[in-house]
Length: 247
Image (cartoon, rainbow, N blue to C red; front, side):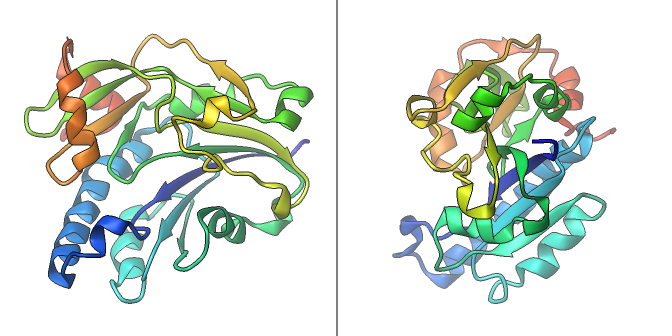
């Protein structure tokens, strides 16, 4: 496979059962806040990366109803991205539908990233240097950077976190046609490395990712209990993750 493509996938506002009992106003408030977090943290983090993915695929739901193309596209100007409305289809099918058929066959490196989290500026450069043999790519290879951190918005502090099954995993696979693609989401991130592919743990000198803890993300709020060892200096980490207000 000579066509090597790195695709970053972010599920932006796909349907979540927790919103079934929420009012329209509550959902719109959440969406407004999530767009703000996306702009303040995740997009800035990607712009800060020395090497970037070939495409950033952003999966949305009800794009027209919530004016998401108009609200998100200006934030992403200059990046290689595609916003894809995936309502009423499976996650895998949404991703496959959004991939350019002309890219096949290819060695696909697909990374997952939540819409309010951060990656280190060297994330994709390091990912691109991972050597993969044909057997691994045929079987599928999960790449993990186990070393990361938790970032608290309220305090601006970073805390050590080692998490091999983190939600920043990459699946590398050789695919001949769109129907061959499994995607990095074919299992939940905490199950992916036990589901059949080969596994590679990459050693790093600094945290390669940061889970952002803020009040609107109830899952990440639980991470606060794990914040035992503070990393620093915070200003240097801000620059590594692209959220330094001074650039």
